[in-house]
Amino acid sequence: MTTSAEQAGLPLPLVVRTIPLDLPPESSLLDLLPSQHPVTWLRRGDGLVGWGRAAEIHTAGATRFSDAAKWWTETTSHAVVRDEVDEPGTGLVCFGTFAFADEPGSSMLVVPEVIVGRRGDRTWLTTVSRGALDAAATVTLAEPPRPPEGLVFADGALNGEQWMGVVADAVARIGAGDLEKVVLARDLIATADQPLDVRWPLRRLAEGYPTCWTFHVDGLFGASPEMLVRRERGLVTSRVLAGTIRRTGDDDRDMALAATLAHSSKDLEEHEYAVRSVADALDPHCSSMNVPEAPFVLHLPNVMHLATDVAGVVHDADTVSSLQLAEALHPSAAVGGTPTETASRLIAEIEGMDRGRYAGPVGWMDATGDGEWAIALRSGVLDGSTVRLFAGCGIVADSDPEAELAEAQAKFVPVRDALG
Image 1: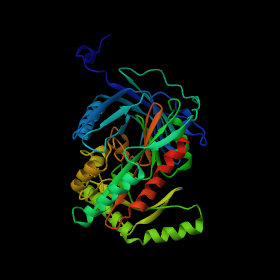
Image 2: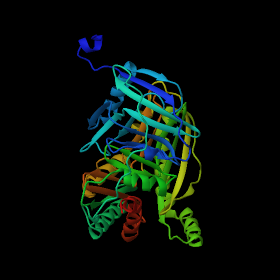
Image 3: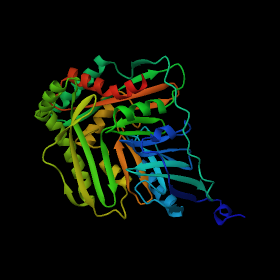
Image 4: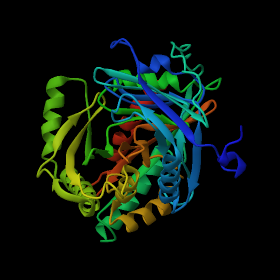
């Protein structure tokens, strides 16, 4: 039997079913993840993993967000969904990763064929197919990944001395009044003897950084400490990080360093720019907002950050999705600078590399537009046997190039250790 969609030459609608899944609470969702087209979004054991590709779109340029949002609206409007769980992350869900800059760079949304999710004591299975519901997917333990072999690291676009020169240039421009803050990044190249299995670093990141959002979409993976935006049933939140100090491993020493960070004028200034940029971007979409007056110190295994959680009540959820909120927020001062346009031009001029999807939004969204989008930090891009690692630092008037280089080295640690 030929459907009307087939007769018109249109793609068949997505048919989606979500059912409860009985999974032991101590099991890891990553243990179910096969090596073919895996996607991941996990924090403290909860979240989503998926595999296969039922639908996808690649976008680029200044309209990459709006083109993806339009495609998602069309896709969800034609989908047939049966959701027996009704939790955030059930039903029709896409995963996305977006380029930092308008040019160059590629972005994508993808709908996996199979998604397994967990939220608290509830676990579910979502299957997606074209035109008709396939037989229920079999969820079994996947073959475990093998560790990389023969791994070597090398400088990327710039070595340490060259990058410190770029930082000094930026400090001079800030001192001259060209801008207030700019975030500069550098890269590191890891090469193995054989193609890498991304599930290996994902497992290690999820175990080592449970309070971060461990993600993987289309080769981009990492454990981000920074939530760009979460929208859930009318509430929107954003975690802003700016201002960093490296941990020593000595608890007493680290507590003293945390106090130093909390009173550092340089770091507080950098943090204030980032919080202000997020609050200003969210304000048009919120009927009320809560912006704390002072940050708290977020302790991670390798570093400590000044952090602020901005929250609000959205008034335009029917017309503005979490992806569109992510577009409005990107790039925040935490990854770009202040003023935004001036900082973005300076990054393109002096940073010396293409960021690709590093520091761009990465996350997931459901058919209602709710979802979670982190900033792709503490991340790397896998291409066969090569991984390109990234780290960035916020540069203000008081920044010291040597200290910024040390901070960048600390931010390489999560992915570097996860590979090694």
